[in-house]
Length: 356
Ligand SMILES: Cc1cc2nc3c(=O)[nH]c(=O)nc-3n(C[C@H](O)[C@H](O)[C@H](O)COP(=O)(O)OP(=O)(O)OC[C@H]3O[C@@H](n4cnc5c(N)ncnc54)[C@H](O)[C@@H]3O)c2cc1C
Image 1 (cartoon, rainbow, N blue to C red):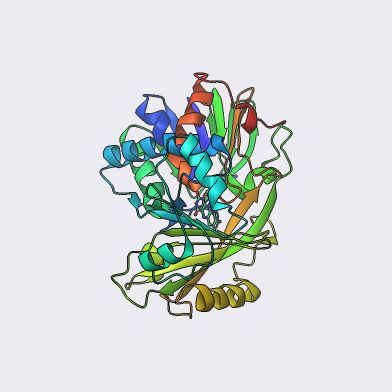
Image 2: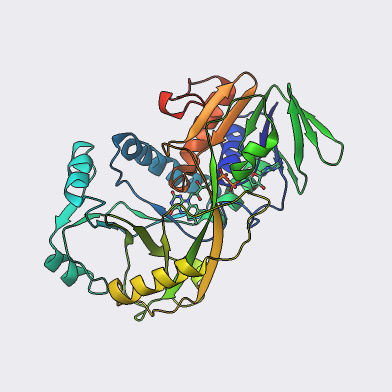
């Protein structure tokens, strides 16, 4: 029996992957399935191949196949392809183009003028990388689909009950029950450091981040996802999905150091400074959006110093902590990699070790 602690994107995907391989699985979640206290809530996350690091370019390609598999298995559309733009000196579009080209990923490199003609709702002032394979994944729908399919495939799902200790293969629950497992997969997100596990974790920085939704001026404009970085700031944008309301909107946010916090003490209140900066940026650079947010939300990043994931096995424990603000796009692949570790079918990737 394999126990999985946490039903955010990663635990839910791990339970689904294990259940479809025929393993006996118990998934334990402290809150309700689909709650908004962690990192996996909301209707939109960026999927993109464009990474400066070829490791992630390759992983995103494998993840794409797993997304299509999850969609087939759950009969649920989860990944919508929109294309993606990378711009700004910090993203170095020319260098990214070289990396995508070497990996065989289709892309176009455009000058500012050509990009402005194609996407008149964005202001460009330098080269732009476009890659058509980027898009948006629906995080809420993904958690729901994975948990539903895991259950249908025989997994036991215990929601609304917190794991208070893991000793040997015994997973102790707050209501006094115990789950006995050969292997325990811990996918506890920002709560991971609080579990008191018998492993040395890398330094994990938990921060509260905020996102803002801006309505499109013209509902028919087809917005791609965007990642823009200059010397000091990185901002991203993507179609909001249902979080932006009934009319089409874009989610825009800073990918920054956030506000240090912990999973249980975070305020849940968006930083007004971030709202002011993002609104000013929308006004200046994204003329196709109405520059007043129609919705906003907070979320937690759990970040390692090198922003690589943790995906490792230590005795009976498998630790799955793939966030650092960029894990969602890999969800069904992370589920497969965690399942491989839990069943001993694969060794941990050296970059994702607990100690590195
Ligand atoms: C604002 C924001 C924007 C993002 N944008 C992107 C993006 O555009 N593209 C991208 O690829 N990634 C993005 N990410 C990252 C992505 O969302 C995360 O990588 C992912 O959600 C992490 O999921 P998780 O399952 O590890 O953590 P979580 O979602 O936090 O899940 C952990 C779960 O474990 C449960 N749990 C914890 N402790 C216990 C316990 N003791 N007992 C039982 N259950 C427990 C929690 O309740 C929780 O449900 C973004 C993240 C944020 C916050």
